[in-house]
Length: 403
Image (cartoon, rainbow, N blue to C red; front, side, top):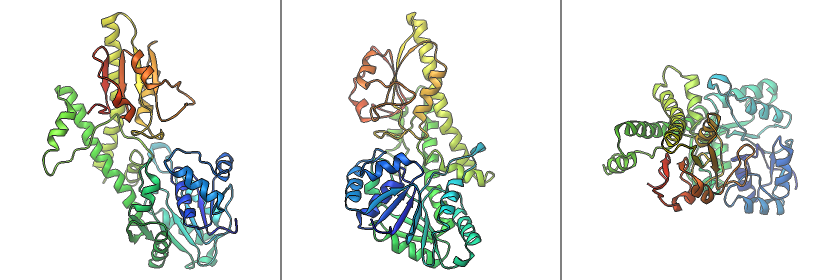
């Protein structure tokens, strides 16, 4: 491949699909990742993550010479930073990966280049990276276009949503915003909404915090209904008949790298102002603990009534239905918690979307269901809806599998 036109720093769940999409548009893309195995996999035209349609797009782009991968960046006209932003202690966001990626680009940047952060970031991160760049490369002051553009895609539908979803794009100045808009307009069919970098950063955080608050309301309802002996699924269905009410479905908590994480970016910087957002995080985290306790109590009750330990099927590990992504998964947390507190019960752990797990021994969902005395639905995977009600089993359905 000739010199790349675009360099993508990070080839994870967002970076690789984005790189593949841009390469599909006949733009030469160099994907950079610190993991040599990821680089080797991509250069073979294969993928290391599960995402519908991605394998074909990557294979075609590599074959046609528009996508390749490396462990180090090279000179290009546009640089996209799509790396993780994990947390330090006390839920403080860590932008060290964004900073490291930016520093790796310092020798390569030149007059007129476009630098974009897509990583979820605390408010002001784009401005901090601009200060870092200009502090180390004062010769580039005012000569770069620097912007922030968060992704807003749903795992399992990423390739479609990268193209058709609206995007919010904010530069550190008007010229940067306009340059970033021109870049994304080549690949995105959704509407592009210009703003400034700080507003774009906050928009990403607010979108997921809003969802977290709404889910917390549903999860809190499920706790109340359990005590009040009310079917929460029927209640929500009836309440949603109101023309201006739309209560979400409760679950075993909240997971994924967005909704379960992004609210902390706001809470950590604005603890006194973000009361509802912070409380919602507490409610959703507590729901997972509550589910683990319900399983423990059901096991103890079964042993008292039957004089033997129960066989328990724990159904689902992913953070949402019908995907293989286990990041920040409440179901995975619940399984870990239950196993830590186990008392020699037999457990069958099920996740139909992955073949194996480095910690858990996985069992086929039908085999687990047939063998179990207690069936615990942690995720509403489509496969589970096929299973019978089975009146001879104790069913704990935290995911609304049958509703």
